[in-house]
Image (cartoon, rainbow over all chains, first blue to last red; front, side, top):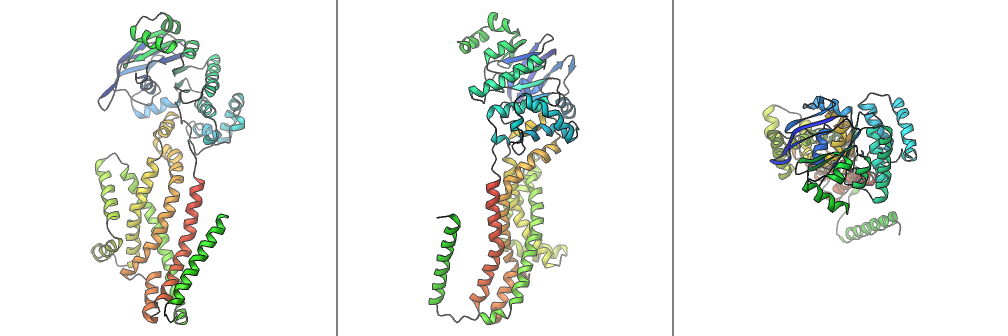
Length: 242
Length: 244
C-alpha cells in the first residue's frame, strides 16, 4: 500500500485532536503508528479504517481517496478489517458465530460456505477447540486472536489494528504478537497502532510518530528509532526504550 | 438447609400465623355463601388474564416505540417520549383511568370500556417498559456499535444482529417483573366498571357480606398468576449473565 495523508484535521466538540496532520509512505506492507497517549494515533487509525470522517483533509490509499459519505464508507469498510483494543467480539455469539456473522450477513456467503472458509484459519491458530465457546469463556489472548481472524476471514485488502495487545497480560500479548508476525510473513498489509516499541521496530516497514495531533516524524523504522533528531520524538523514545 | 425447604418452612410458618389470627378473630365464616358465586370468580379471573395479556402486547409496543423516542437525537422526539414517561409515572393509575375513560374516550367516541381499559393500562405500563428498554439499549457498550460498523453491517443489521439480541436478554427479567405489576394494576380497572377479577370479588362481597371469603380467593387468584412470572423472571436473570 501507498498511503498519502494530507492536512488532516479532526475536531470533536471544539477540541482539536488532529491538527493538520500530513505524511506519506512508500509502497509498503506494514505501517506502525507510535507516539504518546492522546497524541491522535487512534483518531488517525479510525479515519484510515473508515470509521470516522475527518473535519478536513484527505486520505488516499494507492491513489484512491477515502469516501466521505456513510454509504461509501460502509462499502470501504467491507474491504478492510479493523481490530480494536478490547471487547471486539459480540458476547452473545460463540467464537465461530462471530466469524460467520460478517461472512454471511455482509459478504453474502451461505452458512455452509462460511463454515468452510473459517475451518482452516481456526485450526491454524489453534482456535478450533474454542470455536463453540462464548467470548466470556475465552482468555483475553484467544478473544483477540478470534477478533483478528474475524477481520481476516473476509479477505480484506488490509487490516487496521488499534493497540491489539494493550488490554492483555504479558503472556497473552506474546500469542497475539506472534499471530501478527505470521500475518506479516504471509504478506498481509496492515496499519498497527502499538506501544510495543521492540515489536514495532521489528515488524514495521515504516513508522509514523504521531504526537500533538501531527506526524512529527515518519519513515523507515530504523531511521525513526535510531537516527531521528526531532526533540519530541527523541524525548519520547528515550523514556520508553530505557 | 436446601433452598426449597427454606421456602416451604417460611410459607408454613406464615400460614400458621394467618390461621392463628383467623382463629382468634370473632368471625362467622361463610364459605358456603361465597361458593355459590364461584362462577363469578372464574369469569372475573379469566377476564383479568385476557386484559393482562392484551395490555402486555400493547404496552410492549408502546414501550418499544417510546424507548426509541427517548434515545432519539432529535430534541422534539426525545421531549415527546420524556414528557409522556414522566407524566404517566408521576400520576396515579386511578386518575389516568378516570380521565382516560370519562374525558379522552368520550371525546373520541370510544365506547367499549374494555378497549379503553386495555389502552389506559398499556399506556401506564408502557411508560415503565420504555424506561426498561431504554436502559437495556444504553447498557450495550459503544464498542459493540463500532465493531458492527467495522465489519460493514448496516445500521438496521447492527440493531437486529448485535444490539437487540443483547439488549433483549438484559431486559427480559425486569420486563417479567413489570408484567407482575401490570396484572395487579389491572385490578384498578374495576373503577370504570370492567368486570375483571377484583370487581367480581367486590360484587360477591356485596351480595354475601362475607368480606374475607370474597377477598382471600382474590389474593390467591392473583398469586396463581404472579408467582410463576416471578419465578420466570428469576430464572431468566440467572440465564442472561454473559460478560464481554
